[in-house]
Amino acid sequence: MIVIDLGYRKVVLNREKAMQLMECLEGAEIYEERYWSDDKRKELGMTETYTYHVYPNDANFSMQIVSDSKYQMAKLAGKPTKE
Image 1 (cartoon, rainbow, N blue to C red):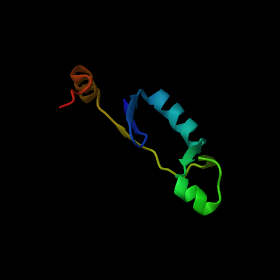
Image 2 (image 1 turned 180 degrees about the vertical axis):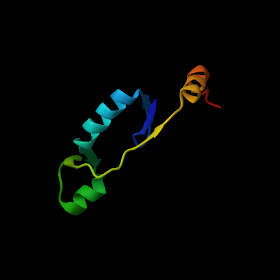
Image 3 (image 1 turned 90 degrees about the vertical axis):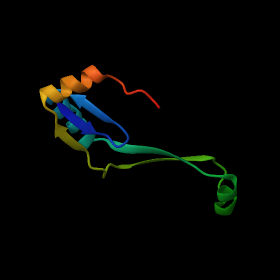
Image 4 (image 1 turned 60 degrees about the vertical axis):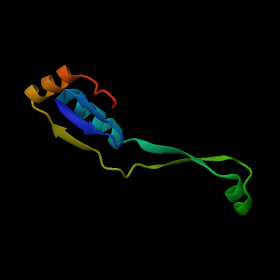
């Protein structure tokens, strides 16, 4: 199994699906909504509360191999409880 770090989350997939996902992510662009406060909008002469941006993805994605035994142990543990 392969663990892919997507920034705020890590996902686990089999090797074939992990490679497909990585290929898709390499070609993806970033979409971002940016909020502007009332003060900042007035300062910049803006009327819109949000601006929208699309730009090239320069983030690096990392992945690591997880052994079958470690994967099975983690799967048995399930979702962690919040304390």
